[in-house]
Image 1 (cartoon, rainbow, N blue to C red):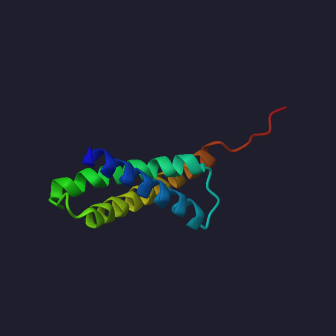
Image 2: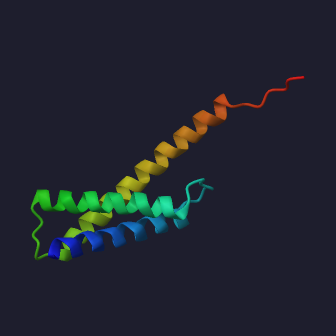
Length: 100
C-alpha cells in the first residue's frame, strides 16, 4: 500500500512540475496543460523507479520525491525540446503555395 501512495505522490509532483514548466515557458507552445501535466507525471513516476533502483530508501520520501521531481523536469525539458524541433521541421516543409 505504501508503494501506491509513493506513486500517487510522484504523479502529483510531476503534474505540478509539468504545469509549472508550462507557465514558465517564455515561448508560445501548442501543448496543452493536460499534456504537460501528463508528461511531467510520467517523468516523475519514472524518477520514482529510478530512485528505488539507485537505492534511495523507502523511509526517505523527501529524497525519493526530489529525485522524481528532478527527472520530471528533465523529461519536460526533453519533451519541449523535441516538440520545438518537430514544429520547426513542420513549418519548413509546409509552406503555403499559391496554386491557381
